[in-house]
Length: 105
Image 1: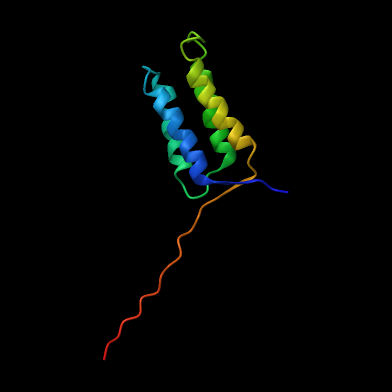
Image 2 (image 1 turned 90 degrees about the vertical axis):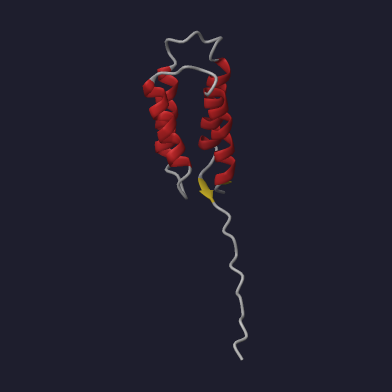
């Protein structure tokens, strides 16, 4: 059985990651990968493999940092990666269109 995840759940995980990342002065490359991750997550149906590549690249940018200083940021990356890996596909709730009837007499 496939596990579907609402795209909004991934977006909330991204927002948590972004809130944590804002507390640091990060490398230009990290910010580029974060931006690419954001752009992909805010597409209708993000590519799972791209998301994982961006996360791994951000993690590699933190290799020179003191692990105690960036532990929460690494934790947010791990949580997002786990959420993506536990998901087979994403879905988006579509709003129903309400038909309007006009009376033109």
